[in-house]
Image 1 (spheres, rainbow, N blue to C red):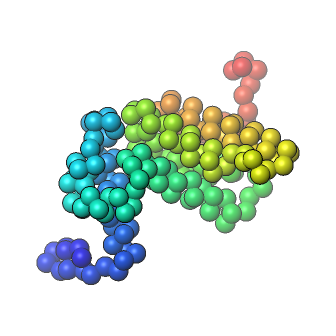
Image 2 (image 1 turned 180 degrees about the vertical axis):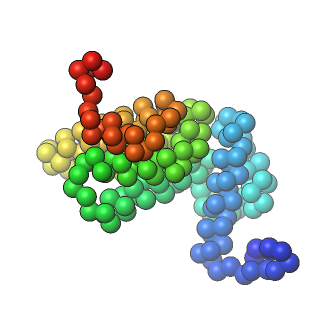
Length: 181
């Protein structure tokens, strides 16, 4: 149940679960603005989110899992947009990634500022990198795509994301000139 302006709204299980997950995630992200992840307790997160510890453990395995799941949400958004826009243009695929990252710039810069970019790297490689089941060609192709894409994304984040997604695409379109190498 959520109360807003003297009205109570009864939520279904799916809606309630989504509410709890978002409340926990928002609470942790807010706390990360001033404290290290290791200094934040599950109890503090649930208190700030106004949910029970049981709710936390029903939805997350750890504090890192909260961040991983938010990252996964954004990676799935990228995957879904790639499928829906059906672009074969590699640069447009990068643009979609940059566009999504730009929309969530505060989150990605928070990962940088709290030394949690390794969580983004882990999820990126787990979702797009080569697997043991891939044949040799697929494995090398995925490795090239994943390492180059993640490297480009991480460099942009580490540099403060001062360029827009459109500027990043334009940079890819132009390529690096010899004087830049």
